[in-house]
Image (cartoon, rainbow, N blue to C red; front, side):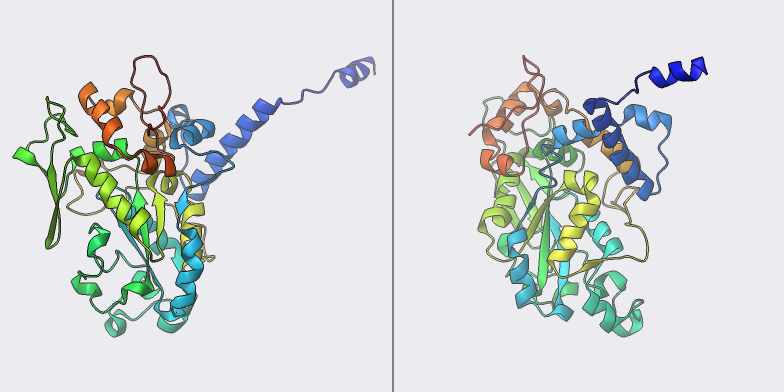
Length: 358
């Protein structure tokens, strides 16, 4: 009895606010991977960044959530596009996450009016379309997913020649420029540098600190840019500032860490609904499949993507001093700010991301 009284007199241990927040953040990560059907081993937990670290590195907070531009035009798209004609399709520069957003949409979103018309399992022999296209989730915009927006009215892919472009909601993917530079160095697709060399890639400037020009080809069209940074700025400006039609611009980083949230908002923007017959389908393996996407071992799956993009970027983004300084000068500071992107640390005296300079 005396022992029971002593136990009752002992104060209860109440978790501190920081401890409670840490537990909540751990539960967020665990619930996402559980929904994806991924069992995290102890080794995975040791390598995974914390949720707070992830948000800090991708430039958002719990309150801001993912960055999506263009939601204010969703009503315009739904109002002017017949439900049976609505389509969602991706576009973006090479290595920006176009395959990832397409896979997420095809697996999780559907336009209900199109499902009712074409059926849950469309007859391919009758319609010439699989479930994805029939239900409104196309593989790319009719003018080609990597094609610059300036050619939207001039060009149509062969398979989309009969699709009305105003009935397609473009979903533009953008990626942190420093990670994009790195990926483009590994796999440049149709980007060709002056002289044909990619030594010291990204090679934004030469020894005289002059930008190194390049060309990029999209189908029958070819454009020239002063540097890789100019390509990044110019290509996205056409969708970000110049486009007057409905379009959404989503960040690659948010497709990784806020996949369900972003996919749902894209889907609803076009009048679609998320499937309820099964849990949300996460892309666990690399979204890039088949030839033309680099070596298989270099493609990034879900766990590796969380580790790679959720942890601190290396000094100068892994670039030499000249290219790092060139990137800070050449990248559009307004574009960086709008999408919450920051320059990586220089390694001199700072220990965090540098804010973009105007």
